[in-house]
Length: 291
Image (cartoon, rainbow, N blue to C red; front, side, top):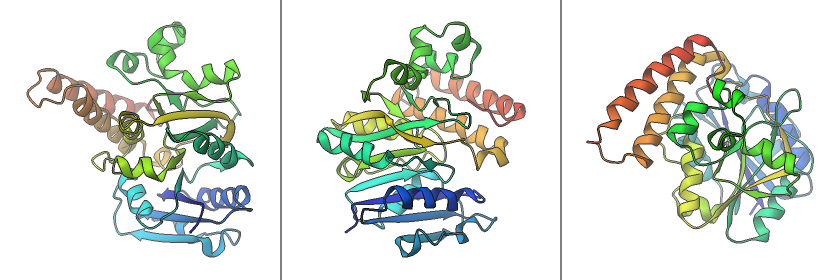
């Protein structure tokens, strides 16, 4: 049985998938590992470009339709019995040593259910991939919002900027509420305890929901800045930002309805749905940067 299985959801990622697999193979060279690539009906042939370095360790499953990110991860997880599940987006590049740093923190404490690396933007800066529990106020501020830029020390802004804060403090690891699903190492026990991803989230917010349910099950989510992964981001969504923006805001509403106002009769629900739908169309018109 492999020590770890890398789970990759691919959708029209071009050459990124092959580069990601090469970096995974290099970082796991001394371990028994496997990888499962779920291709969500790509049309660019990217799932055919499996590099020789990965060899027979990679299983590729081609879906006839795009089932969404969370559903595809669950599909991949069912195909492996590895005790560690390493979610890696195809547009990630693993910096050597990242997996070992994540694993050390994860196995040092049985209460830790998930670890995540410091994600790096294309210019080498820290990506805001670790955050506090989202609220309506943190949504108003947003990562790129005017209020966050003007009032970066405000509590709502700092909830959106936890990664940068942790890195600046020089912390080796820190408990956080949730981390971006682009790259995360998950203890199989924790993943199975919460039945994996909620497949109602087609794209976006499924990582926030998973982390919340893992924490509610008694596990910790830990951000590990010493594990570094390059993630320019949005290899798929850049080519379809209208779809990505609408999916983001639909999922934001689902998260709000599920965790904040679970009653279908709550008067805030239709208002939230209308506001998020309008915001989704507006952001879709503005271009790829939707957050």
